[in-house]
Image 1 (tube, helix red, strand yellow):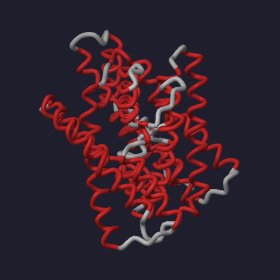
Image 2 (cartoon, one colour):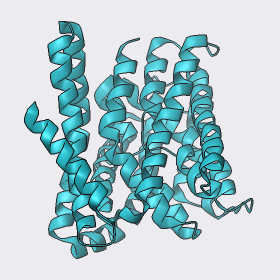
Image 3 (cartoon, rainbow, N blue to C red):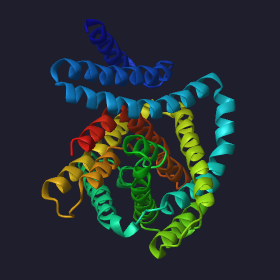
Image 4 (cartoon, rainbow, N blue to C red):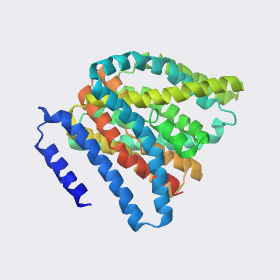
Length: 355
């Protein structure tokens, strides 16, 4: 216990000493990751000592869900560290394929699952909307108070990592039955971001270009299949499942490679956005459960808690870079937020399992 305390003190002193302009910056990321894992596993030790058997089993269940996801991300990061130039070049070629083909197939598979009824998930859609917009409004107030550009901060709070992190976590936490409701939240989040989020990002100049993509076409087709209850042949469903598994794995691996590009000069805003995204959404999720205005059942509320605990999505950086809206700051928010997910995702899962 003393050893981990000394490690924490050393890491904090190092980060404070580092001026984010020299060689130390490349080491900061590794130290911060190590520090987050120390916090995570110290929590495990603490719970195993002071909590009863039920809580200990719950925490081990959370670890069994989070660690496989983090393992794939860490593999991507390790590969990127070993072969940075090659890894970036490979991801530059692979990511468009994932976004333009694998991900659309994943949407088609999610909303065409046998037994999935989108009408039964109307309250879940509304809950996701409340959680996202509530967190974004809170972010707007914080941005004004802290002197941060609203166009930089708020869009990252609208679009969380409900794709390459949220979908695999939902499958691990709730089984295959939990994938379709998570995909419903993913669809809602995409539609909200590519409308309101892009409107904020561009300063009010909404373009139809973001809607002219295979992902949006697939979302529209998936919604049509679900709304009209069009039957899908089991062979097609199995095909969609293969693409879904491949897409999720490639997304997580790609996220690990992208962690190489963090800019530590934007550390403060990175921490601000990385913390505000899950905290703001979780506050509104707790409010939804407390007042129960939407009549969510325990399974839907569990999905909302997991959804609310997720960090900002990698796509936020891609869009900020496309529109030249302080991409280095957005990258810091996204990447630091994903590092901090080792703290906030277990909190979301704990709330989800305590229904």
